[in-house]
Image (cartoon, rainbow, N blue to C red; front, side, top):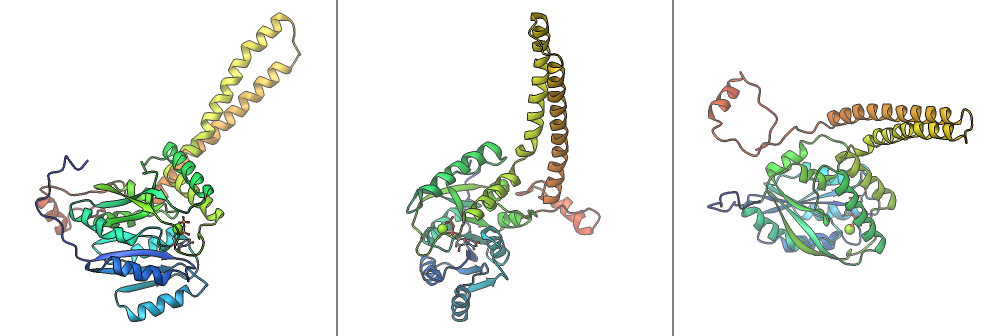
Length: 337
Ligand code: UDP
Ligand code: MG
C-alpha cells in the first residue's frame, strides 16, 4: 500500500499525543494503569483522557484524586454506564491531541507499544492498529466466540477488518475527525476506523492477561456489541427474506410438474397439490414483499446514520476553488484535513 506513495522526505513531528481509555469499575487497577502508562509515555508530549463510564465502585474518586495532582490527566465522568464504545467515543471527543491513541484500561494492551505506534505515525501512517499475536489468559469461550464473530463479520460486512485487532489503535487528527463525523448511534469503532480509509498499518503484539478484576463485558454486552457490529456494517440480514422468498416460490414452481405427474400416474389426493402450490406461492410472495420493505428500511437506515459519503484525504491545486469558497459563492463540502 505504502509503496505507491512517494517516500516522505521528513518525518512528521508530534505536537500533542492524547491517550484515551474508558474505565468502568476498575478500582483494583486504575492506579496501576495510570502509573504504567505515564512511565511508558515518558519523553513524549502527551495528555491522558480517562473516561469514567458510570463506575459505582470508587473508581471515580481515584480518578479525581489523580487528576487533582496531574494537569496532564483529563477525566470525563459519564452520568451512568453507557458502554465501552460510547465511553471511548466520549474520550475521543474530549481529546485535544494531533494524534490520539485508544487503549483498554485493564492493561491487556501494553501502553509501552504506544511510542512504537507514534513512530509509525511519524513515518506517515495515519492509522496504526495493533494486532494481537497471542492472547494470554482468556477463556476458551471468549476466544472461540471472538473467532466465530470475526468470521461471520468478515462474511457479512462491507469492510475488511483484521480478525485479531481490537480497539487498541492510534489515529492521526484528520482520521479522528473523519471518524467523529460518522453520525451513527450504534458504534462499532474498530469497523468505523477501517471504513474511513487513510494509510493504515498494523503492528503485532502479545495481548496480556487482565491486570486485575474481571471482564466488564458481560455475555449480554458481548451479544449487543456483535449485533451492533454486524447490523451497522451489513444489509444482508435484511435481504435474507427476499432470498428465502425466491427459494419458496421456486419450490412452488417445482411442485407443479410433480403434481401433474402424480395425477397422470394415478396416485393422487384431490386438492392436495393445488393447496400446497398455493401456500408455497403465497408464502414466497409475502417473503419477497417483506424483503422489499427491508430494502427500503436498509436505505432509510443508511440515511439516518448520516455517515459522510466519502472522506477526502487531500486535494491538489485547490487554489481557485478555495478562493471562490472563501468569497461565499460556493458551498464548502463536509470534509476533513
Ligand atoms: N469498559 C467500559 N464500559 C463498559 C465495559 C467496559 O468503559 O461498559 C472498559 C473497561 O473498563 C476496560 C475496557 O472497556 O477498560 C475493556 O473492557 P474489558 O477489559 O472488560 O473487555 P474485554 O477485554 O474482556 O473484552
Ligand atoms: Mg480486557
